[in-house]
Length: 123
Image (cartoon, rainbow, N blue to C red; front, side, top):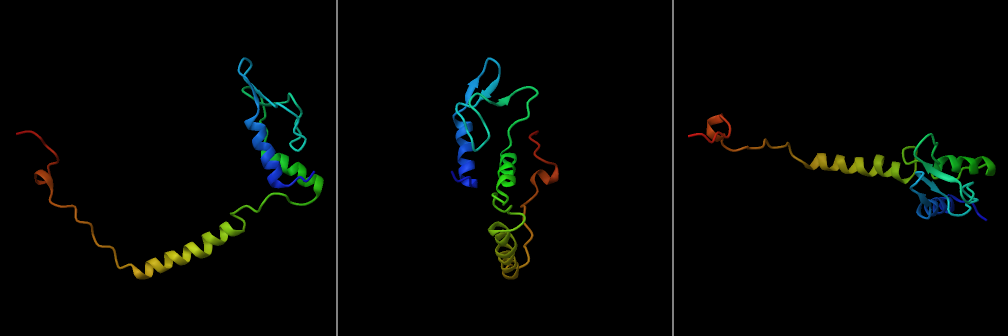
């Protein structure tokens, strides 16, 4: 079975979509075994008190340590297409707009109502 990022993400979504909600004791329980997520059937995945919730990136780190290579996609702040778009394309468009725009005109607010005394409705 291939343990890629998308498969782990898909299992994570099904875990949370098909959980058993026990409202009497305020817990959510796994409905079946999720070997990829290191969960057994009946394990508590959410509780209201004194509980450390599951973390998706914690599960990914366990897989990365076992495999020995990175599974997660690159963070957009570090690199990749998102950073390229932010730094190169958006900035170039902003520069082009600044070149073509003239100096901003002052906004006319119209005549002052009631001679500058505000919206008085007294006679």
